[in-house]
Image (cartoon, rainbow, N blue to C red; front, top):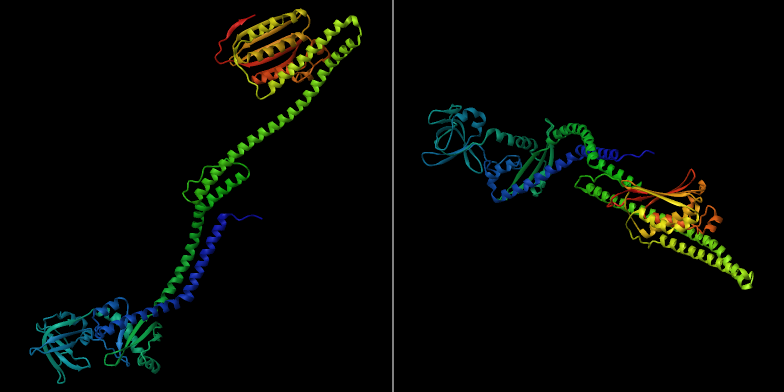
Length: 594
């Protein structure tokens, strides 16, 4: 089954979350938000009622004076309210009014509501202000609060007028100078009081159940729908008790119509939001791919490589966050694991070498003891036989010969034991080389002088040739042992009366040494085995010539300690041994000689 990538999963998760969020918001906006909105509006009405009640208790006239700071501040916060009685009559003072002082010193309150409402544009041209002298015709009205004059016609001292100048007997005349005037903005006042006036006019007179509750000083909350416009409003009526015991009603109203218009706009908005959200999801997926999934995929790739024991990882991610820290940690872990693995591999290789060496050593020991036993068995048997013959008095006249044989075989056993000890010392890890610069030609000449007697016995001669010879840095004693073994071997197998040829040739990096003897060739199958312990091409002839079978094994070990290459090969009429030594770096070449 194909696995889903992390990029696809992030895309699906983001899309699912966005769609779920979109559905929740849309459903909430359609089903829950209207109720929530209306509930909040009614809560705000209650808060406004508490605040206005507090103002009324401190100064009852503050809510009647439409131009007071308390009312103006309340209207700025969209509080639509009015003080009414149980019949719906507002007790708020007329916002358009002025006060005059007549010549006799009496003051008159003048209502300008009718003049402003009927002749707004013409009234503005009068430019009334404190100190302006006026003449007015109208009627006096009586109220519980004050005696107010309601003019139908106004004329200033400079001849400007407004209203109807048809004086009737029932009209009163007032003349005086303005000492105060209140003229708030007509447009703002009408906008502010429009909804309030309509609601009060439509809602009063109150039902008896509401009147009973209000008389018990209980608050009344209502929701009202205008039958003509279909608009909805929230209404709160708060009873207020005056100092004289009368009850006034604080009538507050707020519009609930905006939520429907908002819902319609929001539905269209969410349609566009859904389309834009899908594009946003695609962009977020690309962003996730760059910021999250791509680094995770790289880390996953690195982890898979580490699982396959491949620690050649890339550099850590250049990020200063958790992914960057994880990448750096993974990189360090990879490096440490790589080092540990290399060490383990090296240790494993070394262990395998040691195991192989141990097995080889065990086999060599077995072979060594077997060969040593075999080699010692013959001379011991000979010595024992001749010794028993002497003891038993056999061939009394030949006792001297028997003694010579015993001494000869004892010497062979001594040589064999010495060779075995030499080989064991060379194969031990404690062997040390005492190197010094030497010339192979000088060592060869010394060996030839020591072997003069053996060469004379077979009527042999030696021919030494060296060209561009250079010094080599070796252990002279051990290299003498090598040359002695090779020369002895050449003398042993050379034809009688032949010449042993020795060549030394220096090159830029090496010094080549070869020794040739004319005689029987070594069978091809034996060319590699002659370096083995106790190996003889012709065992009977070697015993006759005094060989122990360990000479070339000793030569091989000494050459390996000197990191010297060695080889043996057959030529047309004999055998040649070849050695390659490393040249001593400080050596100066010797021209040549014979």
